[in-house]
Image (cartoon, rainbow, N blue to C red; front, side):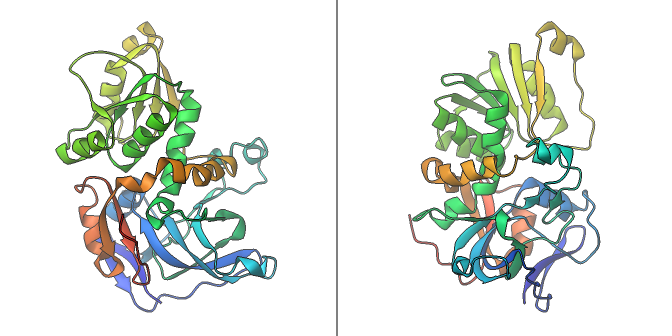
Length: 328
């Protein structure tokens, strides 16, 4: 079968003879319809995030149709259209027992420490394959996983309706945070040096950041080290700075400002299983996260998709030939 595989930093190829997956007794196998591209995928593509070996199957934000089930899975699930929850906590450790599965020390992550989903067929544990609500378009379904990140971050920050919130970074995660804020009744204000990304955020209802003014809640979504400085500078006294973006490069932080304004820094790592992902699936029809999709590429052009993802406004996604997307 075909798979998009990383063969070296910045080099992605379509392998025609990738092995088909085995279906364990608690697994389902799905024919992949589409895969979203996100920042963590790009760090693997760049060679900045180590993977177990090369060639390496990329991607983690997949949707598809169940075509085979294991012995312990209901046969009626064959034919279901599903979204994959790509983080598999062990469900046995103290963190998992406490419901904090995001910080499970043995978490398996598709595309990072487990082979990714940019393949024609993928096997995953059945409990991590979430059935699509009836009538939900594929465009919205493929954004369910990053939407879960955004919704979990809003919950961790305790955002209240009518609060003005600054979103630093208008990449795909920043755009989803903006949509989630609007649905809550909060007011998203956004800043991004990329004119196209900023324009996309404004098109979706966010306001551009004014030259002055402070915000009770600031979401840093880009992971760019200078963005943390912006977040701290624009946080109001007793403000919450919510960190979603990640970088291994140290960022400068003024502890004077943090202490004098009594700021709180909240690290937000993905979401907790199963509640956060279930909430994202349930709310996808309301929030319509597929509105952030812009660059669409077929599997044959996967190399172009990864090469252009950082510069294209909105979210990039890769579709397989059997996918037919109805016009909106």
